[in-house]
Image (tube, rainbow, N blue to C red):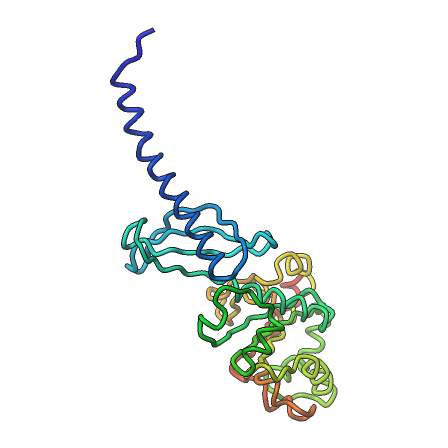
Length: 282
């Protein structure tokens, strides 16, 4: 059987670019894994390596999805600058492994402290790259090593029945306006006392009261619901209307030493209170 030479040529022309692209991405995968190993002193796996579009004119980028070999559940993006070509000698990388690791560890710690799974922790740490190069340390070690060079942002969720929320609307208004009752200040201070940590220069606490109608959704994706943007302007909200009934933030927990201090540290600009008729929730 004769094989049409033209078909062979076309097939080769189609396959060669694909093969060349595959070789380049395999090379980048190796370099990304090598970079992470040198950066953190442990083995990583990088998958799904490919080009990503540039939206801001900042040059060509290649992204992979990485995770440490000892924790496949901790996935993060690693991005390589390819504006100088795939085989550029000194490329730059962007990734968030150590921050993601510390936030995960802190979140697990807070779950125990607050006796709740509806918790998120965000950490900012200010240190020089050479202070950690070639090793991975835990968040506990980081708190000691970078004492007073770290900030902690905590988001904590509670559930409330909507009918009960309506009956207690005055209480929730007090929370966002800093006009707390004695019972509220004592209750919040008990939480704050557990969260204070002088290794951080700043600790802030956001509390969100969720409509218990959405309990299953919140439990399934707590990080999304604890961080999703909410606004009095519905089109600016990332969550379904009526999911979050009340949100308030307490600033600078380490400076709250007595129950009566709590009201002074309520962030009056961060409050949110949902208003609706009962029929909207049926």
